[in-house]
Length: 165
Image (cartoon, rainbow, N blue to C red):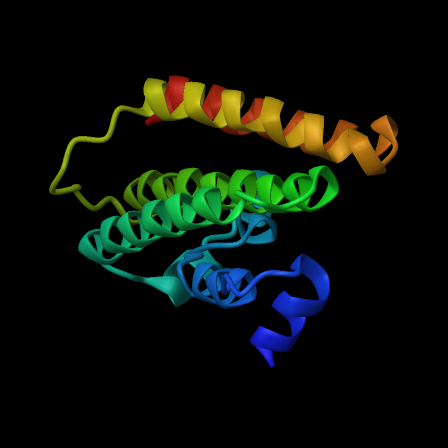
């Protein structure tokens, strides 16, 4: 099935769809769960996830490999298809940063100590730079007004990281 979709959408033998399926398995906590935790102080989803720090780092390492493979797959694609693959790459980077955010949220919510030091200020910066890329891609096909809620929430996340983590 993936090969048929790859051939039809991207006119390539590269397994872009398979990479996206792998990527979805590496996503620890979704954006909605972060919103619920930040805005409603509801850590129910964090307790449900409860994956190890080691697992998060392993997922992020796998995501890095997926990103490099997606970058390599862009060769030979036309401009429009490259834009799609680039959006996948930016999404993958966002998943990496959200995975790291999960560790700091879990640390705060459950009072656990992390084995590896995680620089919250640096993570806040990475999320801000990633969001700039995300916004640029978003604005190619969507209305700017739809970004206001996400922008506000990213601001809350990065402020929290700088103040509390």
